[in-house]
Image 1 (cartoon, helix red, strand yellow):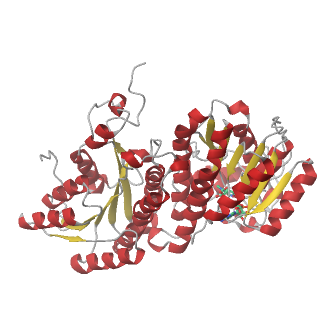
Image 2 (cartoon, chains in turn cyan, blue):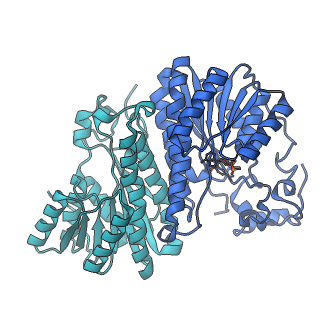
Image 3 (cartoon, rainbow over the protein chains, first blue to last red):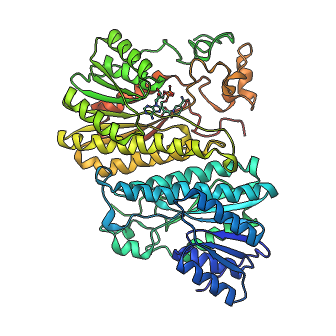
Length: 255
Length: 298
Ligand SMILES: NC(=O)c1ccc[n+]([C@@H]2O[C@H](COP(=O)([O-])OP(=O)(O)OC[C@H]3O[C@@H](n4cnc5c(N)ncnc54)[C@H](O)[C@@H]3O)[C@@H](O)[C@H]2O)c1
């Protein structure tokens, strides 16, 4: 994987959630290369990534967390702070998509799946951010980047909880962003377009709607997220940066 | 137009007669005779105003609220004022079984549901930034405003609308569901979510002839909100001065008055009617231009 950008995050600590996801793993590797100590929330793949980062001279540790359990999130955040001392940067892996075979209109949607998705991507996002921002506010500085789905800006049929959670994340980003006044913390989001497997699996091909006719790559998202977290973006807060090949900008199909 | 009100009474009477506030304007009338509307939160300001307006237009009303006493009283008030058929149902929209049962009762009583106004809700919070926000209240915003009021209720009503071959669903969001207001993350999250569901539901049900639209009210003070800090700083003696004082809400709101529930009722009536037959998936702010841009001079 080749990045043409570099950021110097030397000495900072980042927390990356949902680190089993490909994009969040790519982001973790890039952060580590930029001198960041990385705490990862996730299962096997996150643990694997942490081992890889340590083997290549970085500092990283993975934490298994149950997002549905509010108390568990609090305890895990305590362990992160005990291990690293602080959290400077929080990258919330809040990208959610409903699997193709589960896509149903609202009146037929599986309500257990609805609750599961809300637990992790709505309540979990709030819980993790709350704990991390509490630590950042104590020091009066910090940056949060929410990696969310473009579905929060361009709703799609058949994915009620993904649309609801992604749109809520847009709202959280904007209002937490203006809470900078009280917290000293900048909050922004990257709204990611559709990944390659989603292009392949959907029953309607959205490629003809894209100004850049290819799927979103993890590197696209990681680069934008690192920029928003960096000091280069110190005047940017409460924004949603769509990294989506132009999907939400307008109607790219000729007719 | 009266130039200014006076400070001595509640917010409603303070502004009466100003910029279309109060009874000065002439409401439009739609003919919705023979239709049935299910409206939630009818013991509250906006639900009551919408129920009354739709009853005046000929709708039979199934009026839902958590509060039994005021719910009953308000339903009777509407029936007396309009001569319409208004039936009150005590329902807590955070109780999924209660929703299922009550929708069945509405269908038994009225035979159909043409218009659904998902409006019960509230803004619960301790007005703190995220790291001090109250967890219990965060959850309540989501349970009532998003999951109960919209997701569960629409799931129950939509199959009836599909069977009928027609329907209009209207959802109450907020300016907080369109733009970010700090220190109220419980409310903002839930309302951004319902603004988006308005659009995804519009996509899902357009081919069943069901339209889904959304109203986003601006600040609509309760009569007892005399001391609401948002309105407390209004200077009625030198009214124009309010427009240059950044501490004053009227500095930000181009139409310099609070929203009133009747402002919402008109839009609800439009969305409910066939005049809106080609309009779906829209979120319309009724906020005096508050979120249109920045009205300061820069
Ligand atoms: N008033 C404002 O400034 C304002 C601004 C933006 C949006 N809104 C929204 O408008 C809608 C109507 O609010 P309002 O201004 O008329 O306020 P309101 O408090 O007068 O009315 C809300 C009603 O909802 C009912 N309700 C609350 N929880 C319920 C539950 N679990 N089950 C059933 N009913 C329940 C309440 O009993 C009340 O009668 C709400 O969704 C609110 O979020 C209001």
